[in-house]
Length: 79
Image (cartoon, rainbow, N blue to C red):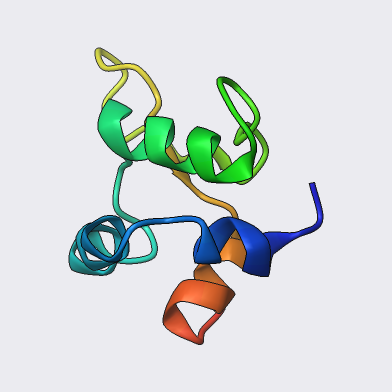
């Protein structure tokens, strides 16, 4: 799980646009997690490129967000 550039290159342009729209701390939809899994090599392979974020509300599950180095590759920043 070190080929961040390869995973980002494996995403479709509309998927990158959607990720950029939600921002570096935005919660990932199941569709985006599936896209990252696909770009990383198949079902479940993207785990680790996205991680659990902070829980905003105790009544809701923790969201998945992009890992810091993936954000740096997509956004040119670290969050």
